[in-house]
Amino acid sequence: MGFIRLCSRKILSLVGSDSVKFLQGLITNDIQRIESVPKGEYVMPNVLPSLFLASNGRVEAEALVFKHDHALMLDTDSTSAERILNIFQRRKLSAQVEFSILNNANVYATFTGVSANKCDSKESPHFNVNTVKYMDPRIRSIKSQRMYEFAEVPKDFGVENDYELALAIEGLVSHVNWPSLSLMPQDLNFQHFGYISNQKGCYVGQEFMNRIANRTLINKYHLCFVFNKHLFEPLDSEVPEAPDCAATRAIANQLGMDPKPVLARICNSNARKLEAQCSDLITLIYCNSGFGLSLVPRKQFKHVTINGQQHLIALAHT
Image (tube, rainbow, N blue to C red):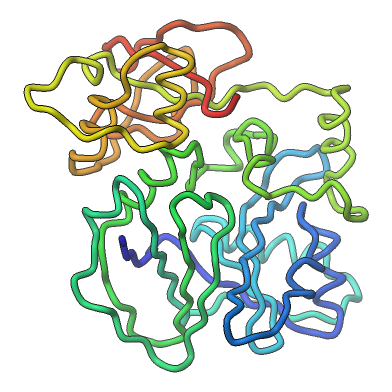
């Protein structure tokens, strides 16, 4: 099992008598889902994947919401933390809420899967008593858990790129420059990872989510895997059967090719992110192995050129 400290994540605290009602009107998911988590020694609650939308339905920030000591906590990307605070400040009006970034909170993740062995912790890490653990429901197959330790000195385990790779081969992007890209949640397939509730009441941007759900509005992009053609070349040695994940299914079902050499090359390399230059698409993550996730406009590509090399593409979710 891989164990990672997520240095790129921050924790925000939201407290006050109006905190639940206040947050309910701002996020795409239903806060009542964490309000009604059953108590019990053997019950590990889920974090609640949520998005903050602008009034035009574009994503402003992403967060995982959980409860701790009578407060609502938001686990978010460090680049989004100040943006969420600004959203709270703009929308607060007369609501009885207080909010802040917690400087003594650290975020860790455990996960299984093809990239987990590269950051396997040989020793069981020791945490102080003020630590809480939640299941991450977004990708059940990698059995990911979130751990939140409220302590001044963080522990360092693993390389965060390996965790990003574990999410990426399942079609989930963890870091996005939201303001510059002006994306709908559906551009990134967030509706398939439990970020949007279709049953809750009003929230900012809901009209656009309803229009997309009713097919009266179509989002601009497809989220696609990109594979450098060299990844498909035969390997010199036999490799184990490729694990079942979104990337292997896309290779087999859409490209009609053997995913084994591809996954072996992707997951056995030391994952390192590179800049990707391509005029036809927006690349969100691109690794030195030649694998990545990109936003492709709604027109058909059979291959694209990234950094001067030919790549095949496949939908990240069908």
